[in-house]
Image 1: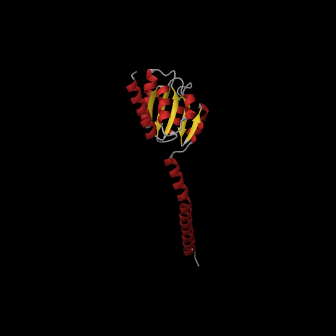
Image 2: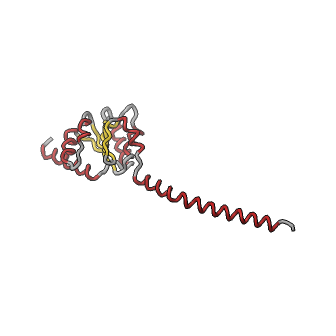
Image 3: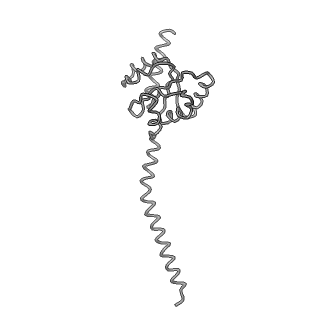
Length: 172
């Protein structure tokens, strides 16, 4: 590969790293062409950008980045795929879903300004809630007291109506 091509790839990887807020390094050693193609389709369906990269070029892209990705350097061995996404837990859930026999497996991740190194962190990454999930949870919590008050007022009104109706039907 020519030096110009390498520098262009490093530049492109740097742009991807800036564009996406979460990145996963995934070991795809042992995947054949058909399995890799299937994984790409699933990534595309989940709005994940998948890039199979040379470790040395990714290392140089990390070094050129404004952030310090030093904790990820030791994981750049073997065949590496870079999963990029703007939702924190989506790649982790995809890796867990398709990870039969350990392929693909998580090497490391940079999620929510934190580094997670090792496959043992996959469950933790799956449990991270996305921004949309957190907003929905907060809205639900805020609506709950109002719904309880309205429900109580409606049931009290029905109870009073029932008492009055019974009193009205009672012979004197």
